[in-house]
Length: 221
Ligand code: SAH
Image 1 (cartoon, helix red, strand yellow):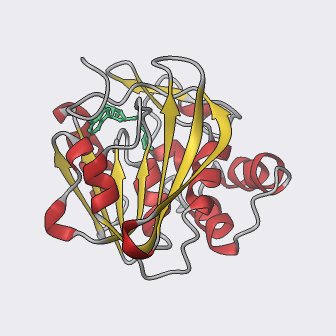
Image 2 (cartoon, rainbow, N blue to C red):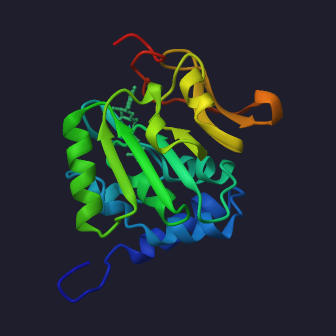
């Protein structure tokens, strides 16, 4: 918003949703609305703010990146949220994905391993009025058992495998979405759905390249 209360990026954001998100097959109206509403430029640090609606990931400090808009929308859609859910995110980064989730879910818990990123995300979200999101600093591969079970879990960094504690913290019928694969390249978005008798259905979806998930059930630092 500028002092006149106008959003100078509104057109860029609507264009992003049309060309990068709807045109590539994202159809869930809740996801589309969330991507139209959340001011991505407010989360992208300078000097890259003017690129906030470009079709690419961008640096957010500490060698980390905010994912390409399409990937944020695609992973959110894979959670199959209908509204009102309890969701966990691993890898808060700048807080953008958490903000998108919070437009759909009832509560969003998010874990970030780097304190400076967690602090900045908290400031961003508070400043913009997203008050249904709680952030802690720690190893997200252990999950956040106090608020479990989760209807949806999303990890925005890629690990060698889906961490067991995260699977355990899923609700029955809940879905977990995360990139899994090699250390830097050769990863794919994976979706795990928890069924009866602790049976997990695992799907291997889109090819991607994400920053590494570190921590106990991630890659060594
Ligand atoms: N969802 C973020 C994307 C951040 S990139 C956004 O919208 O901006 C992935 C993030 O995962 C990085 O900030 C990185 O520091 C964090 N990360 C890596 N390993 C982690 C772990 N074990 N626990 C929590 N966060 C982790």
